[in-house]
Structures are given as structure tokens and as C-alpha cells.
Length: 118
Image (cartoon, rainbow, N blue to C red):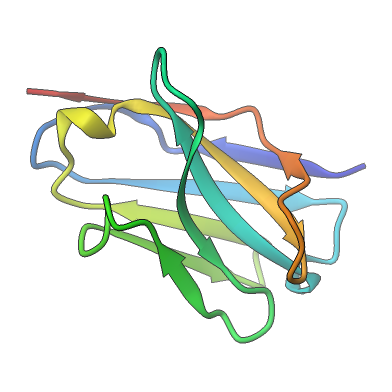
């Protein structure tokens, strides 16, 4: 059974940092691209960052480029999202997701809340 369990969310002041973790189980971790998405109240879910399963190539949304970094630890089956210089507009529920190589994201975690106060 596939499980994606996010952790590391919380309340932080603007300009602060957080690191989200997503522990994956029930899948061959290196065979999947992994991503982070977020959904703010009243808005649609949006892409934040992704990392390839093989070469670890990364992609980051323009809205967070230079502030957020995605990485993965194959030994721990975990993907991370390091978030720096946080802004109130980064407030959202952050979701981890997996995608079979070069295909659409098809499985999501439960999400972790990130709240950035001004």
C-alpha cells in the first residue's frame, strides 16, 4: 500500500524558513518522480516543485524560484522541500505527490499546513 506522509509544516513569521518532509512507502522510490503542490484557501492546487526519479533533475515554480529547493534522499525514501524567505502568500496546505516516470502525478499525501504570518 502506497503511503506519502508529509511533516514539517507549522507557523512561521515572514522571512523565516521551514523544511517539509515527505516519507514514501509501498513503492519503488527511485522509479517515481516526486513533487510538491500547495493549495491556499479559496484557490486551486498549484505546482511548487518536482524532482526526477533517476537523474534528480529539479523543477521549481517561478513564484518560489530562488527561495524553495526540492531534494530527495533515496536511502530514506524521503523527499524534502526547503523553504526560505517565506512570505504570507506562501500560506497553504502543502502536498507531496508521486508520478510514474514522465507521466502525471497520480497519488497524493494528506498534506501539511504552512502558515506564514506578516
